[in-house]
Amino acid sequence: MRPGDFEQKLSRQPLKPIPADWRAEILAAAREIQASRRSSFLIRPSWRVTLKRQLTSLLWPHPTAWAGLAAVWLLALAVHFSLRDQSPELAVKASPQSPEVVAELRQQRQLYVDLLGKTETREADRPRELAPKPRSEAVKIFAS
Amino acid sequence: MPASLDIARVYDEHARTLHAFLLNLTRNEADTHDLLQEIFLKLARDENLLCGVRDERAFLIRLAHNAAIDLLRRRGTRERARESLAAETVSPFAPAADPDEQTFRRELAAALAELPPEQRAVAHLKLWAGLTFEQIAAALEIPPNTAASRYRYAIDKLRGRLRPLYEELK
Image (tube, rainbow over all chains, first blue to last red; front, side, top):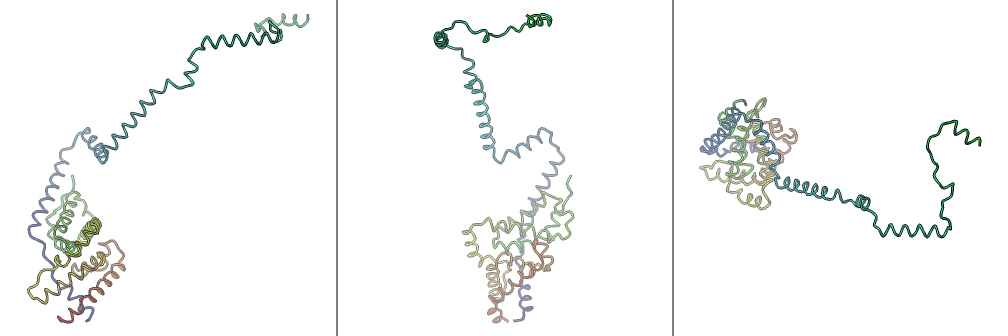
């Protein structure tokens, strides 16, 4: 069998014709799409409709997922605001000292004084008066 | 406003080629119809699709090939098994009055069905669409050498399978 003969034999085999009724059916469907596209070009939608379409096309593939994400965000915000004024640091600062604590502190201070045997603080421990004085007066003090 | 495309003209010029090609690849009349319609609906949706296309037929064959390959991939193993069983009944060839010719066409259809889709596509386009290897390469987006080698593999397999019958009928 010669290669050329075999290939010619194959290529001579007639193919099935396309069913005649397909033409009208396929062309009708195609023309319907063409007509709808042309009418959509003639009637230009308003910017609101366009925005809505864009958003819908953006969100539509997974509307449940987007809604779930929004719910999680709202929940996180609610928890954040509800806990904002109850932080432990602020709560400690805001609470006044109880009378028992004050009495205990006084008692400890008295005990400290009794142990040292002094009721007055030393001169050196007293804070100096820092009221401004004239320079000449200061000189007199150092001279005396 | 989109450019106006004469869909009827495109159908009359290319539908026959596309139909035979799709039928040879899918081996299913309903799938062939759906894919052919899908191609023309795509053209209707985007009427500029053929603008600037040098070889309309090659471009449409590429659309058909991509659509058919997508369909074949979508089909599961079960579907493929069913396809191979149905391959003997759905033939891309016209029935023949002569019994010997009918037998040859039936065997040829069965042998083609056994080829991998990429070899079958090249063999079909070379033998029955009359395309050159360069045109086949452009249509299927493969190098011309690949198109030629796939054709050779396909012809060798067909020859091996059909040789006894061919010699007998000669």
